[in-house]
Image (cartoon, rainbow, N blue to C red; front, side, top):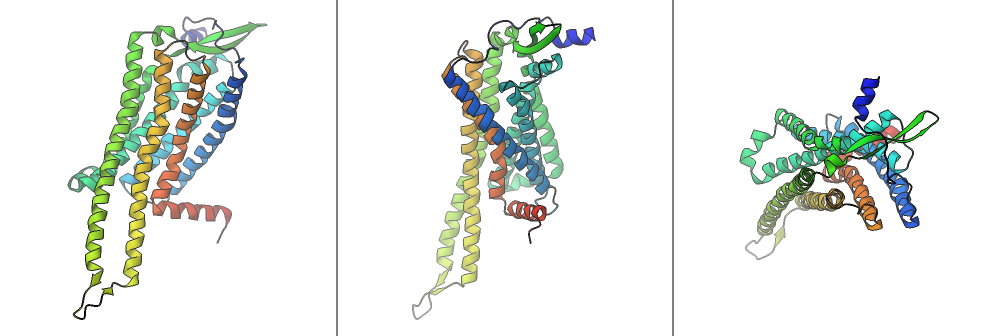
Length: 358
């Protein structure tokens, strides 16, 4: 037991400092209450429910097939695991977490790591989906070489391995420490590990990690989706021009005869679906940028600028960044249900079956 204890604690003893004191600023207390006691739990609960619905719907054989289904399943699992990993984070932020040695070890070495692994895994899956659509629309001659169930499974596995490797250093940013000792009872907490976080190599790692894993991913997603949008718009423009020339014929008497109403209805319905797809792709790019930017700035400021984490403005940025990140993990369900007609039909059937609607 002593060996296990030494392994978990290392050479750290007492926490020290006032970093664990409750905030005295009334504005800060209200901010944290609204952000982490009201908003965050709601977002996490909705996100967990939505991703569970995602997995249930994707278990239907009639809903999608092949690589697209694998990517969407992996995305739902990644988002669900990230949201579940955020539950202990909320417990700690609301000061309702356990203060045992085991809990302190988890909060020191696994809390940030597990959440970040699945967030990065989720973003890499979005990259795979964007690249898959890009090949289908912009490079159809190469699409069949990559669009297969076997290749998708391998790619998902590679995404998880890469996400694990690049986030592995995060297990060293904190260490367990004794907060207080009363009547032989030890209360444990965590503190920052300055041997790691104050090293110049750590700053280099944080910059590379955030710029490559966040903005690098964003640039790839933006390039793929904007290329698809450009190709779609060019296709729709050409199709409309062709439709305008063929939708009406001019007989000898000069009268204009329009095509039948059924064909017009089908064409309008297809156009609505195409417009919806373009809007969805634009929304994915915008959502990714808006939700990831505050968290990237938060991480860089926290580890490269010392003593700023006590300021109210930084706390506001942290609250906004954390809640936007949770929102990103939740909104994927609504984006893809908006895009895929089969998905929407399956969700409707699922709710009808659950509530016994006709």
